[in-house]
Length: 128
Image (cartoon, rainbow, N blue to C red; front, side, top):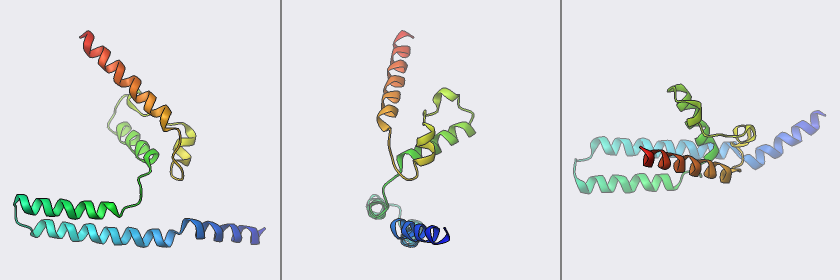
């Protein structure tokens, strides 16, 4: 039993590669810190702003892809903390809340929900 657990752990460690991800995270953090230093030291001009934006986009290009379900869950948490009504929360299923860190799925249902809300808001504003 212990051998199976160790083997499973080794496989997960090989597939997920947390050490490489942590190293990449540190590298990106250093690049953003260097950019913050450059921003503090730069002159205030349109050309400097363009150069700094280009550097920022170059760093963002190296970032791993965004986990959309994690972003939506964070949005819901912030809305709850700010006292928004429950109907403003994105209706994530329990599976999306728990497995969204690993895989993204069910976005079509959320897009339909968003379209319905926009349609309702448009109808309400046209009535007013």
